[in-house]
Image: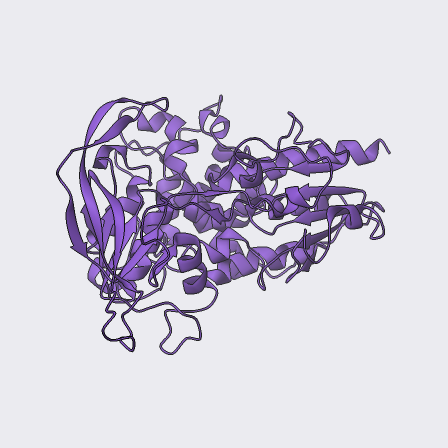
Length: 470
């Protein structure tokens, strides 16, 4: 019988005043007992509306039923049929806008904690599984994957399970893409990502790091002398956007991408780390998305007084509610209806030896008010004349979104892109080049991990169909 309690089981977590001083994972995960009790809240709906809200189509009621029985390995195998990264998705997917949004239990109470249960199952499997996955027999076809983020890893995993010889090419020194360079350790531990990558390697996937496709090798070379019959481009959207206001070239101004990469992969949070991240006293993070929250919470853990500067109100913040709530709990200040118009710097012509010359000393902002809704339905921010004011800061992080890097487009003949730099694909993820597919942020611009996974999954099915006809 289903447990008809309205609220779901809360996620155990570090206390805010403890976690804002360390980079350990904030959420501690369900216990076995919590997971089984939460699983009994699922009604097992025959039409599975939750599954329809999942971009990778996990059979959610079936895996939850196994959790309720205490058969966690069976639950994992159900998830693993359609998801290559369950431990990742259970942590960072916006379930509230996807599977949980359609949960029937959410009509009169809280939806079943699908994401938390997925995380529990994946963690249980990783801690208890003793048999590595069996590598399928090769079908003789070779496929190259560009980028080891969620789209690339998902595409690689699905193809490897079908017997394809898959090689993933990664520009950085560690596989995982945005999962390792963009998402902080306290939200997604690197060991979790590495475990997922290792599982794909056991399936036969090769990973070539420090390989910048478009520089060290081109798509034409992959499909020519290297003998790959198909290519999937999952290179993400790593080109940061700026405001183009005076002072953005001052020392102490970072894109969120650079800041998070140095924190995550170059260990800037360690004392004496060999990477130029300034351990600042006052930090302004400009933007209101999940990346802005990640950057702000990292800066807080480095000991700074951190302000989120956002031009709309709290209701329009695009970040997940949970991330905003965590940021507030950790002591981050939200300066809303506020927009920077200039980054202010030190300039002392009388003392050329002053180390502060050319570095940030603050930001000049203007107050905003909300007007009529824009084309996306959000109320348009309008400047209030004469409301300018200065905020003292020694670091500014621009978290304004990203777009696809043009490198692959510029080095690949016949590859069509849209006005935003996204690669144009058809309904089967096929680009304008035969045998070349693309998906995830490289196509859509910055989006979510699970949508990128869904795109990688779609591309893998299309590549399989294409190569089986050759």
